[in-house]
Image (cartoon, rainbow, N blue to C red; front, side):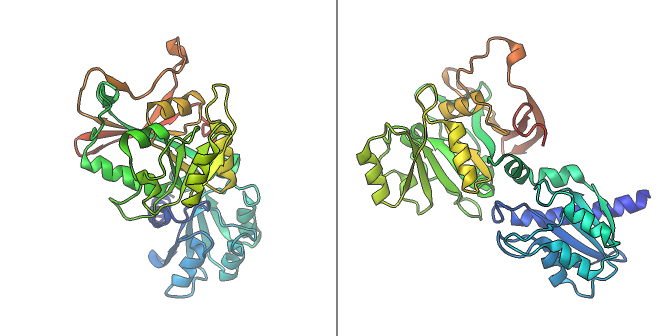
Length: 371
């Protein structure tokens, strides 16, 4: 039994590695990998390459070097059992007559959840579920939250010094982190559907918010600019990537016309109690546009707002081995007066990039807590 479990985990790890190849390309669909094995030999592999194209199981079957009947299929996520952008994979799987199907995680989509597994079992196919379940769920944390809540998974990322500053007292912040950390940040951008900053970041740094340091698509760029005070000549409006500006009804009409004439969308969002853009409403609208993941790279004000509204699922802090003393804090006033009320985190992973530490934490009471 232990040997069988070890073999199953080995091939499921290979399926997970294949699934990751679809990162940044399949949203709002999940990342899925599939491996077909006979007598310890891999005879076919596949992954979901792009939204709207064949799913991983179909690509693995098409890749098979021999008939897959009687072979073992390793699939990171439950095969779909409904007609969506593509036909149901369970029908094709059943037609192949595999000897066994090993599934990593159950699909959380209510139109699929458990139905694909039930169909396989009803067809007499030996089906096992839960091999490397945690890893298979983790790789699809964007999909799991989005499909259950209709909201994008929110990652808040910032770089800070050892004493918690994101800039000096004069506002200078280039560069806190190392070149290796910058490349990490660009890979992170490529993995998300959208990236969000506030107008203050654009005014201070004039960034492009692209993935120019790595291979991958540039995410949709979103700027919070409630009064449309940004110049249409800022770098973010000239780098050839889709850009959306979120404003309020108080924004001047002329500012909106200037941006729209340049081909950029201005999205009017309701205001919260403080007169700022209602972040809950913005995330709801993004979810309706099939934005399943959002990277927040804004300054202290934006970071504080997302934390205060409990909208963050994942926190990534790039910790640089530097001290500047008086400067701009990474996070502002959260209204917390007792330590017992502090936001709680669980450390998921701590790694090193160049001279920096990357702290990957999950917020315990976020919307992902029970997913």
